[in-house]
Length: 93
Image 1 (cartoon, helix red, strand yellow):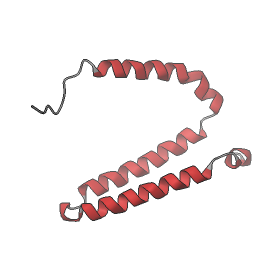
Image 2 (tube, rainbow, N blue to C red):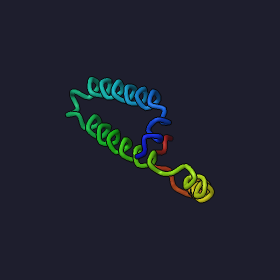
Image 3 (cartoon, helix red, strand yellow):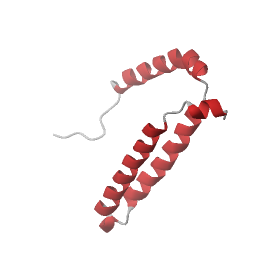
Image 4 (cartoon, rainbow, N blue to C red):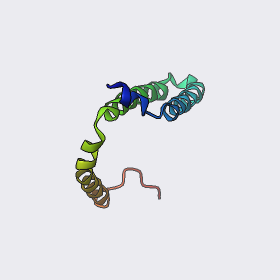
């Protein structure tokens, strides 16, 4: 990564997001002490995965994102339409 790109990153937002995630992990840890920490472990895995994905996305050039954004937009609209035709998982009667 070039020094110029590192200089333009808004570090405060990332640091605050990580602090909020840590606060959430502490709360989940205290709430799941009797449940063998299953949910806590899952949350830790998702946090690490999301940090890695965020760093990878941060490395992608902005112009590349602008070029492929219509494809993503169309794909997400299609996924939203597909939700209308799926069966519900949890029905409350």
